[in-house]
Length: 80
Image (tube, rainbow, N blue to C red; front, side, top):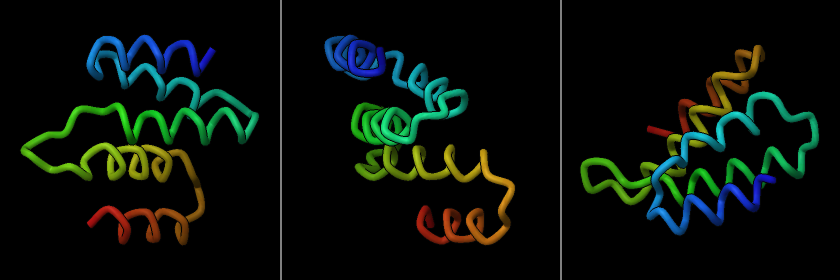
């Protein structure tokens, strides 16, 4: 399902990329989570001309879901 959704988002030039977040939040299978995160990083439209906006957004999104303060700190360091 995540691949089908990613293909649709790619056809729509990135529109709906935030829909991949549901897989990152609710899925238990790490393969699906990582696929959704990678696709979100690649398909999210850049903002303010920043080509790394998608990857930074995906990392920040994943770090918000963890309760481990060390992991959160590492995520913040990567996205700066």
